[in-house]
Image (spheres, rainbow, N blue to C red):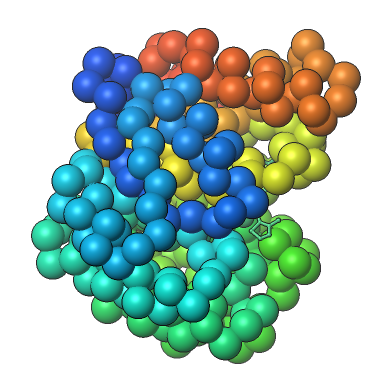
Length: 277
Ligand SMILES: Nc1ncnc2c1ncn2[C@@H]1O[C@H](COP(=O)(O)OP(=O)(O)O)[C@@H](O)[C@H]1O
Ligand SMILES: Cc1ncsc1CCOP(=O)(O)O
Ligand SMILES: [Mg+2]
């Protein structure tokens, strides 16, 4: 696919979402759950958040895609998460995984290990998280210990390129590494998306909600286009919101407004470059 073909697909995905309001259910953390739902709604999707195993199964079967984020685990998730991932995989439903803060606890490690055979369509994380997940799954580019600092990365996006490619080659889907710029790969093509705002690092949930928005797009597009569409609308909205705010509280509100206002054409034209693996 050349750049123009990709841009046409992004514009199409964004338009279909705005027209059809696809449901992308979520099992996500209690810190940013509201931001995730509002971001999904702002781009035109439909949100539903659950915690229980049977409800995860219902949403997995009902929705166009699903979002799973391990940010704040509780004992119930030991049942809910692997079960929901299995149902998604068996029903060939796209799903997005955010391995938030991988490495900080035993349940987190156990659950993330269990996801490997259920091949998430999109894996979205910061560079430290992507490298640690590749390590946990014994793939190239990974490391045994996680370099996450709380929920934040301590390494650059480019450091995670080989881990991202290895993860995408394993899943057959896409991997998105976020940061100052975003690297998205399907294992054979690498796209780098530019824009955003430094203020996105000073509000909680910009990463989580990006995963939720990628799940909305994954309901209507292939994993690579879904991940790049999400990165593009985030980078565009971040740039625009920064232009008319001077603090992180108002930035968060302005950012949701810009997600809502961004047109399919503008999102598809947000700057990205293509490179070899
Ligand atoms: N320094 C930065 N400049 C511009 N945009 C950024 C910067 N850091 C992160 N972002 C954007 O913020 C969003 C969340 O990324 P990130 O902070 O890496 O995720 P997480 O919160 O999961 O660590 C992404 O859309 C990313 O492009
Ligand atoms: C602060 C925090 N603690 C557990 S989950 C979470 C939210 C992380 O959100 P993001 O990764 O989008 O910054
Ligand atoms: Mg995160």
